[in-house]
Length: 335
Image (cartoon, rainbow, N blue to C red; front, side):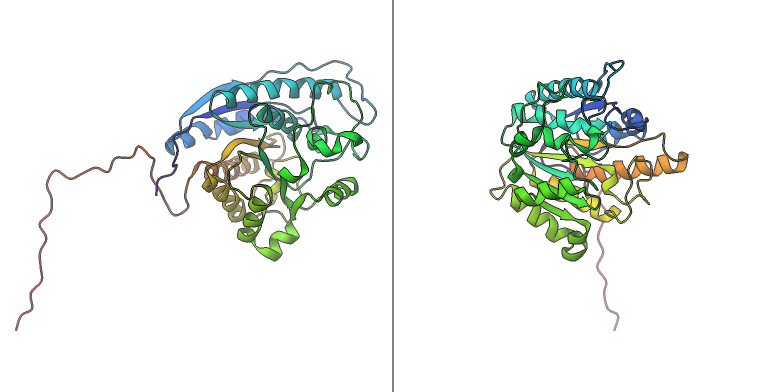
């Protein structure tokens, strides 16, 4: 079986951003993933990669909180820029692969994707729900709020925040599914239950198994099997024993095998259209932990592009033929 069935170009976009949370270092994530060989690995799979480089961001001085929201103007303006860049890549027919960066970037990536593909669905693989509103967030850190700004049903629960005037809700709760949750705030739990968002915590993963989780998840958001998929993957969805260099680790996460299976099943749909990789933080942990985190991330990510654990070959692979064929021999019985 080939690695990939469709020779679609991948538009690689670096989003070196960290102001959606208090720990510096996620701005180094794109470079760490690049240095780990993301481009080379994708090309080995027969994928055409168009590297759009890294976005640059303006950090607004004296960006005082707006209510409970920290760094609102910096994060808001950054996500507006992210939305435009993602929209341009997808408009040009490329699968957009976003290397973050903290998870506040997903506000911009999903918004940008929706400008081109308004019928999209979102698979959110994360230890956290990231759907706090500015009024329910315990911390005020926007990397825990990105979904609340773009979910239509929460429009009446989200106050106006300086820097976010441009954001228009573009995603319905029925088009969102969570996988891997295990650290959910009370306000987020209320939202999930109030609006019936399909959510598979680690308890459901343990109970049902990852195969059943994926079947139910995809059926819930796309029963017709026709809609473009946006994958937003926070590396803290995986257990911190395999991705230690991240800002908000939570024990009891997805195993390496479960992470790979999720990506394999998404790749099998043939409808992955945009992928976020968030919260790789090389400033946390030692060299060995950094290497483990990036290598694990790449191995899991490769499965999105059709890499098979059972082996495969690039779509352009040509089997070499021998110049001289061997002569077969037959055995005979001696009497």
